[in-house]
Image (tube, rainbow, N blue to C red):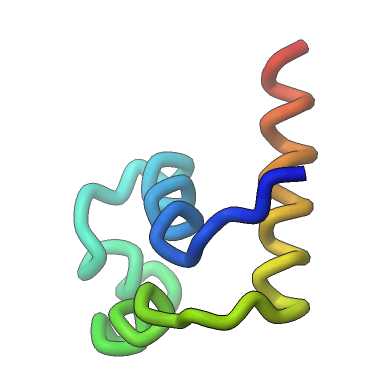
Length: 65
């Protein structure tokens, strides 16, 4: 299973939500844009990142069918 980077996750989520910019996604999530910037720069792979990756992989497999 491919583990997505925070940048890839944000890009995929923006694609799913049809948000063009980080500002749009931040507003949708109810967080400031700086929070997304901090998430993008995250270097460690933690449980949260693995859970999100797992969910994205499941969604992608279902969409391929």
